[in-house]
Length: 55
Image 1 (cartoon, rainbow, N blue to C red):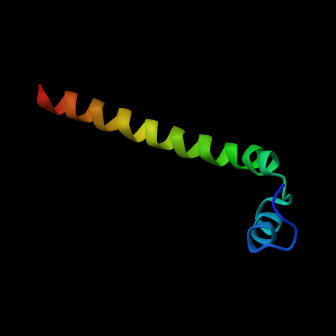
Image 2 (image 1 turned 90 degrees about the horizontal axis):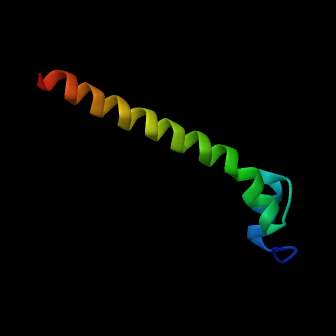
């Protein structure tokens, strides 16, 4: 748990609704997963474009 009354606890409570460290991580994981999926899609698209334009 984050220390009660600290700045980090206030930010975590307002952003994620909890001050438990693993609760914060659990609630942030979907956003991380979406970010990684977008990165993968862009990387695959760039590789496919480069391969197609090479021929």
